Image (cartoon, rainbow, N blue to C red):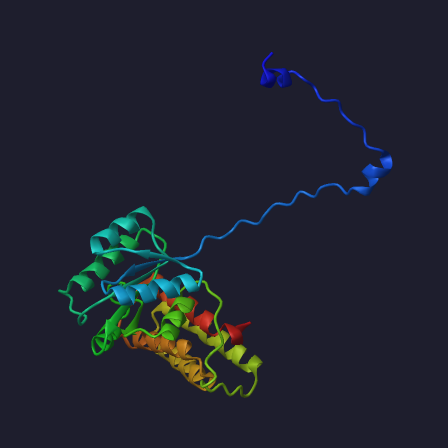
Length: 264
């Protein structure tokens, strides 16, 4: 008889455990693991190998998923398949509406209209970075970082626009807490709510008032990221720059996050 087949039909006798032994062994606990949230995906468009490697390494260090694409065509195809949570795009030139980078931003903006909102951050060398900074809010551009990149600045932008825990402000940033944290909480809550309501009514004088008030608080507290966002709101209030509703909502959300320490 085949050895393997001889085991197939054999029924092993069941052994009985004593009541005392069974009582000593606790019942197995059935636990359900909490769902693991996928890391945010950051698309990287950077032709320079060294800069690209720096970007990818820092993105991975923060627990994010880098997605490197070789060109604009590949970026558009990738967005069609699965939209990223952020795009970091290197632009080797000024913010010229006829440039390939500017046109790509415009194409992504149209493509993004039917997708969940994701920010586009331009990486540019000086003085081009300044010119791109002026165009924030146009053609889907949300933020600008100067090259060569500094790891601290890139990390701050990733923390600002993505759902990451914010690090403490640099110690060199002054943060005189006067008169009290409670006072700042009340004022900031009123200012942010007031700006949102003024934006809904397109009340530019009120928008300007609340934006400037938030600028002042950001300066006093030394919260540089909040100051940068409040500056952007002031330009919108003055009518020098337009901003899509999705971009405005994203900016206000980022502003609340930058002020989170004083709003909680």
